[in-house]
Length: 330
Ligand SMILES: [Zn+2]
Image 1 (tube, rainbow, N blue to C red):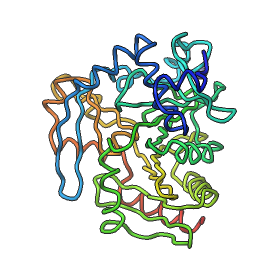
Image 2 (cartoon, protein in one colour):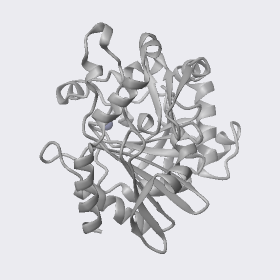
Image 3 (cartoon, rainbow, N blue to C red):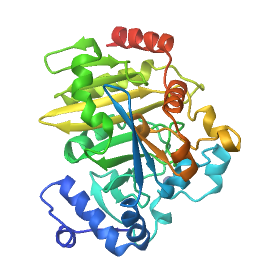
Image 4 (cartoon, helix red, strand yellow):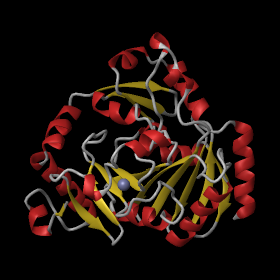
């Protein structure tokens, strides 16, 4: 594994910020790593269709390159049986990186959804668990200002649940980025308000979620950690099921927490003709459904989207309880 120096990165783009360096890194990998060189150009060929739900939309992307991730077997036995692709010793020699602090490395994701798609693993093989990494998540969002940064829980879309990592995709791809301002103004309920920020819930959106907006990173870190601590736990000793999505603009973080009820919808497990290979993670909850199989791209309907979101996110009763617990705990 090699870290690219600023001089090397300069051949592939600007380097005056971490965000620009990350873009230069992807440009470097598209030329110097055959896997990235093959997969990034084919991203231009992916097809996208849009379902409109009035004040929001869901985009569906046919992306065959993502079959490995969407169909990943994340059972403990399957995970143990394979070499961890995020550990430095197992990563391909051509995969270069740039450091993020002392504990993380920014890598180019070789199976892109976004024209610039990053994976940011911890430098140690430790399980995917957000506790203890919330501060880094916020720092990453504020330093990668041209990216939306996200976290997928171990049973919520992470294809390496045994190795802690974040991901980031270039901004203005996910529908939710377009929609959040209107959602906050027209479709949100305020739970907490302080001079630095506020917490709201949004429910009129197929999936129930909490949005934290703040200019104060310490306050935000406390809010997110508190929310994680009061979320319902599905299996004892494990992290509550959740996805996080964040971006930073004009001095303010927007952090969206999607509490989860299931890893995959029943459509994922259905037989042949009824099957839809959809494995929801932060990207899907951001409004972009990744479909690695062409037949699913042609078959998926509006009612399937309603069904999928309702199964994998919290139902009204559980969400009410979570909101009340969050308000009390903060
Ligand atoms: Zn590992």
